[in-house]
Image (tube, rainbow, N blue to C red; front, side):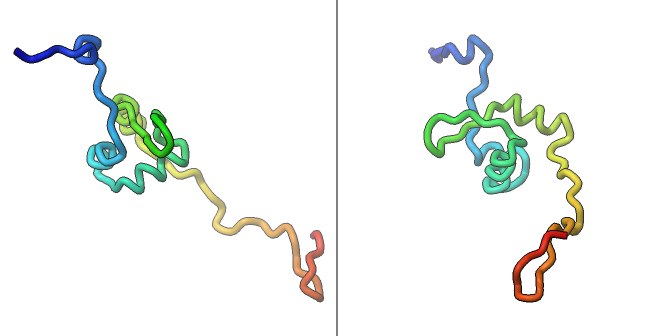
Length: 91
């Protein structure tokens, strides 16, 4: 007879590791970690360097259209100009 766990009774899915998320998203584990560091994917920290992801959060990430990079200017404005001896002068 199969044993029923509290998790099954409550309808809670097991947490995913980065490899499972990468497989689900069709990307690499490194990309999952990059999205985590950028705050795009929410993570459950179990200990030092032990990250787990809630499946419903990963699905929500997809449903909302995934990650969209913010618009970054092609060239940042120059705030300083080099002086005659290599020093800087405020513009």
